Image (cartoon, rainbow, N blue to C red):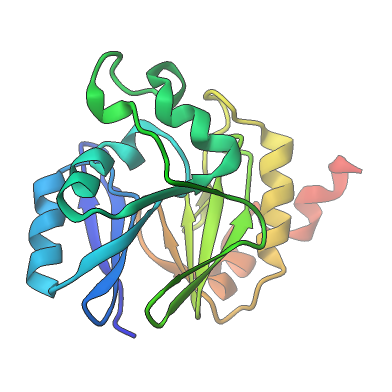
Length: 211
């Protein structure tokens, strides 16, 4: 299994990831700059089978339509975020822009798996940043979207956000193995070991006032 290709795209630098298995693979969160993504797919010799979305915000979905049209990849999103793909007011996209009106091919939930060649992705429900945000666990890689960043977490003041819910999702992630490499939706990569030690939102004390 190759290392993921990391492509920061769009005005706010959303991390788009490309993972290959032979001549097939997946694209995770193609947020913008479709041609840039397609050029890398061509260079890598990959025709993606799936477009995996961690959530439905505009900066993670802006290139979905173009990538799907060019490759035939199926669009996958958490079941409670599919509503954002058809409503620009909820995805924060530009009203009337066809890029932000998407019909997903598959809605997933906790425990579902997605197979692509030698790649196997486990879906982990992590609502809080949005109603239906998910993380994808593949081998020792966790694609955490905007749930977990290096030393920080996603905001909860947008449509579908809820801070207590996010904190419970983070508690779920904190039970994962320290050795996991974390690939977030924005910013630098990390590890679960680092996050457990240095991210203030993953410490046990942070959850005491929930109970």
